[in-house]
Structure formats: C-alpha cells, structure tokens
Amino acid sequence: MGRKKKTKICDKVSHGEADRISQLPEHLICEILYHLPTKDAVRTSVLSTQWRYLWLSVPGLDLEPFSNSNTLCSLVESFFDFHWESCIRKFRVNFVRNNGMDYCPTQWIDVVIKSKIQHLDVCCLQILDQIPPSIYTCERLVHLRLYWAFLPNAEFVCLPCLKIMHLEHFRYPNEATLEKLISGSLALEDLTIIKTSRESKDKVQVRSHTLKRIRIDYSTQVVIDAPLLQCLKTKVYLTKNFEILNSGFSGKLDIDSVKEYREGMICDILTDVTDTWRVKDLVISNLIWKIFQYFKSGPVLQFRDLSRLNVKFSKSDLEMLPILLESCPKLESFVLELVKGQYMFREKKDPKVMFSTVPQCLVSSLKFVEWKRAFSLLDAYYTEKAKCALLQELLAMSRCSSICQIHYSFIPRKKSIEYFVG
Image (cartoon, rainbow, N blue to C red; front, side, top):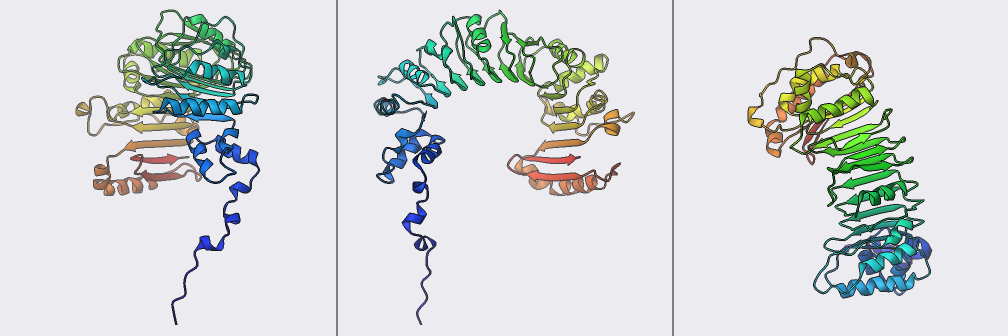
C-alpha cells in the first residue's frame, strides 16, 4: 500500500479565501497601506490589477532618501496629481542633496500644507531651502517634526490643531520667530527642542496654556510659562538652561547632563525641587555623585513631596543610599540602576551601606523597589551561583506585610537583573 500523500494547508484554501485583504473595502485597504512606508505600499502594485494604482489613493507619503532623484520626482508628482483636490494627511520625507538633484522640496512642502496636511515630518539634511511661510497658518496640522530645517521669519502664526512639535538641529532667524511658533500653536501639548544651530545669550520664552510635556536639549536658557506642565525632560550644560515660572509645578522632572557641568548649578536645581516646586516624580542621570558631594558638605535636602525616584548609582555611591532615602519621607516608588562609575579603578569593591536609623519611607510609604544591574555575558556565566545565592537571600528576607512580593528576573538582552518589592 503506497504512502498517503500529505495535503498542504495552503491546498485546502482557495485563492479567494486566502486573499482576504483584497476582499476588504478599498478605503480600509488604503488605511492599512497608510501605515506602511510608501516604498512598501508601491510594491503592492504588482499583486494584481486591482492593486496596481491603489497606493496612489493612500492619503500620505512616507519617503526615505532616494538614490535616483528622477525616480523620487516622478513618484511625488504622480502622487500630487492624484491628490490635487483631496486632503493629504501625512507627508514624511528625508531630503538629501546630491549632484543630480533636480527637484524643489520647498514647493513640495508648500503643496502638502495647502492640502490640509495633518502630519508633517521633514528632514532637510544638506538642503539650504527654507520651510515655506505657509507652515505658520496650516489649519489642520497636528504633528510637526523638523530636522535640519530652516524656519523663515514669522510675522503671524496660527496653528489651531498642532499638538506635537519636534524641532531638532533646526535654524531660525531670531528668538521671536520661535516664540511665536510656540505661542501660536493653540493646542500644543508636547514640545521638543534639541540642539539648534543658533546659540544665543537671549532667553527663549515658552508660553502656552495647553503645554503638558517639554524636552529640552539646548544650551540657551528657556523660560517656561506653562500652567498645565506635567513633565520636563532636560539636559543641562555649564549653566542652568531652564526656568519654570509656575511655582506649583508638581509633575515629573527628568535631568541629564553633559560631562562638564558645575556643582553649584545642580544644587540650584535641587533647591528649586525642594523649596520652590512640588515635584513628585524625579529622574536623575549622571549627576548623582555630585549630589552626594553636596549632601556631605551641607544640610541634607528634604524632598517632601517626592513619591517616585529613579536614579543611577555607581558602586561607590551606594554608601550614600541611606541619606537619599532619609531625604524622601513620602517615597512610594524607588528605581535604582547600578552603573559603572567614571573612575571604576578607584571604586571600593565592597561599599558599606549603613543605616543609623530606619528611613521614614521604609516604614510608612515605600511600596515598590526596582533594582537593575548590568552584567556582561561572561560575568553572567561565571556568576550563576552568585545569582542563585542572591535570590535565596531575597526570598529569605523578613517582610512586615503579607502582601509584600518579590519578583526576580534575568534578562540577557538588556543584560540586567531586576527585583521588585511591592
């Protein structure tokens, strides 16, 4: 008796049943293609006659740099011809000037702005053309990202729907233009300013009654007047580069720094956190050892409103852990990441962490602790027994509450060990 031939799964399904996407209404197919890069959407044109020109109906372009400028120009012009009297929701393009460049990106941007664009993402690497002034009165623009772009002088700005603005390595003629762009965005909630090519001693005024999140990586000082501010993420340089006018700021402050910074500047920021603002969530990177030096030389700061703290420690910093916990009497969540110090060869192998008294937060408020430590793959191999011993020690810890739980995990990809107490 011959061997029975196995029936392939694909043989059981007819072509009509297999191609279920083609059975969807055309507007739903276009919505699926809308979330793909344009080059992938164009590739679907070879599937069948139905799909041949379907990519043109997608209300958006998402283009990476083209090596052939003629191909890029032909594709964009075909798309614009098709959408001449319809809305274009998204235009994402990366312009790179080359010797054979024969198109004008400024005109393209002007076309999409007049087509009631909602999402505009432009990278003008090595392009010297300005963004057209019509960008300042785009009625339906919701998301704006400009990278290496040159903003024109602004006399009037009205962007009633803009919620997200991301400006990186951009240029602008004067501070008034940037200030008008921000204040004229009447629904702005998320603002990012990163490393502009214009460094000025003049302050930039950020005024908004809707702004909730700000990220600043910018040496020029920014004065923030935003009553609804919930989160400020900043990288500080030689001097403090931000000022918050709202003394009741109680959101999240995320501070990073360059290597060259002044201890007094950090102390000024922390004094604002403890005395002026009511920050409840604090994230500190690369500053912690300077903060501890301040603790050693002066009175211990009291973060009385702080409920969430995320810090990075080197091994030698661990000796200051008791002081840090004592300064946060209402702390509920504590995330500690152990990192290599700047001077690893000077660090003590076994730092002594001594508690003279039990910090108030350990008794009354702390609910969650996360500890992260990085291991190399070689260290992970040779410390398996040590990890098991640590786990046993954690599980053997006495607990004041029956609901206290300990979770331990080893994540090779991130090369970290974490445990949680909650």
